[in-house]
Image (cartoon, rainbow, N blue to C red; front, top):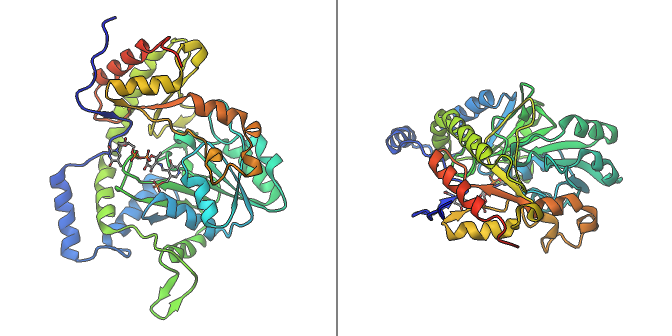
Length: 380
Ligand code: T4K
């Protein structure tokens, strides 16, 4: 095989879905005319309503980012003490617990789905445990039935970090309907985005006023502040962008689905490489395309593959390495002991998120696969 040629321009793991700039300026004219830039404006109200339908959830509250949304989710359910979570996630997940003075308790993960291992949650429950914060990693849904069983047995609340799970369905049921609250991230790198943004989805209508108060400083009216809330409001520019991006999301999802097919086709049967598969009965978010590199069989480590790609102007990402339990702020916790998290450590050393976005051509994906195959046997 001829050696692959490096890309002229950098190829990143993700690129934001960008609507036509003229469409955006027309939309922004509405905002300018209204002279209303934030605090529950018309764009905000319209996007909140649209997303309730698109995400198939009874209640929804928009936020300025997913992290603040998660902080508020913990507050709204009055979580305290200890919350069981996964070490295999973005730093935001355990950090929101810390910001609420809750101790994260790291639980090992499932070797296939890479989500929290529901069977191991129970052994981490103590009298201080008030909840479970599980992540649908890469949009793969957690074992929601098993998590619900443990939660019910011990009277725990369940929050899902669904940052990667926009539009995911499990046997026809929208993913935002599981647990007490689900958080979606609308960061620029997400399938659906508002540049920065996020949302909480939930079923209990009584939570809506509390969540909306918490994200607006606790202000009920000009004379009354009910609680120490935060500023979690989405602004009108982000909401307007979101309304436009929403029109293009299904097209983007379809293009990504095709690219995933090419990756799978080209990498099928390569010894030492496995591609993330969509579980049966699940509609995928097509958020990330992740491979796992088994160094012994592939003859090159994940880290070597990551470095080799850079020589060709391809910037893959090691989502999620290092584990959150390895950060300086968490590694002293008893639950962060590597001996208790063997699967998470192995998985974190194998995963690599590949370039994956609609503007990437089928030829580009083929070229990236060609590159990858030349790295075989290149060592650690
Ligand atoms: N929970 C989970 C499980 C999460 O994954 C996240 C966020 C959160 C919670 C928190 O939600 P937010 O508060 O963010 O709403 C990126 C995103 O910033 C972050 O939102 C996301 N997860 C995480 C997995 O990925 P970084 O540090 O990798 O971003 P960055 O700037 O390195 O961007 C990645 C690549 O994307 C770049 O190499 C180039 C490309 N890119 C990026 C941006 C921002 C663009 O092409 N254009 C852009 O505008 O975290």
